[in-house]
Image 1 (cartoon, rainbow, N blue to C red):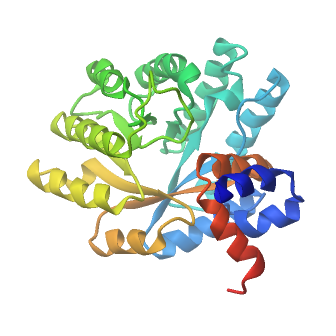
Image 2 (spheres, rainbow, N blue to C red; image 1 turned 90 degrees about the horizontal axis):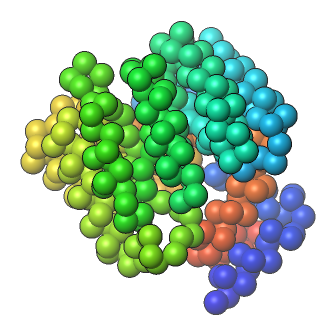
Length: 303
């Protein structure tokens, strides 16, 4: 209860106060911050996925601005030879306002990445967006078979069926590329598992389906149990090293991340940056109130 209370109060605190906590999980506000952090990871044999913060925009002028920012981001990062790819949220481009405009803006971004021999992943958002994002991905995959991927969330009961629904897009020449995570949005029990173990079980069932069916799997978790079970599935199905990777968020479970890298598995860290960091941070607090106790320590305990 204390953690939930703190998590609800902190969003109303001054931004400078929240930044004390946020800077551990966010590269900064600018492209240069993202480049700096990505270079640090690259030097540690870790690749990154770059994310400009922001979602659920209110008007299409914001969508156009976000498109232009992403085109610049792709240009800057590839010019710097950063070992990375790019992630984006369709609601940043007007998914809930005008789906066709959203598609065209994201298409421009994927086309830019394709021309630079790079890759864009479509983030899965809350349940109201899932059907539209599946359609969006299918359209883009047909146009850019090597340069676009999608995220799935194991806490949604529908997810395995959604993965299967896209299996026709998979081929040996152009494997379909999915990131699998637990999921962060608050959804009703009718459509989402509420039991922690059921979310884990569904994660592993979906992952095994991906591996058996030769889909490229981004194993996105900070759960040591899921990491260990993923190792077993990779070994069981004799999955080639170029058909999977592990993924984590910037600033989360660095020791577990290091152990995965030491075992010579490909590791990709999700590096968010941008001026919308405050909203991102406060949403993370509401999704995971346990973070509140860490924030209190960061604010009042040196080190």
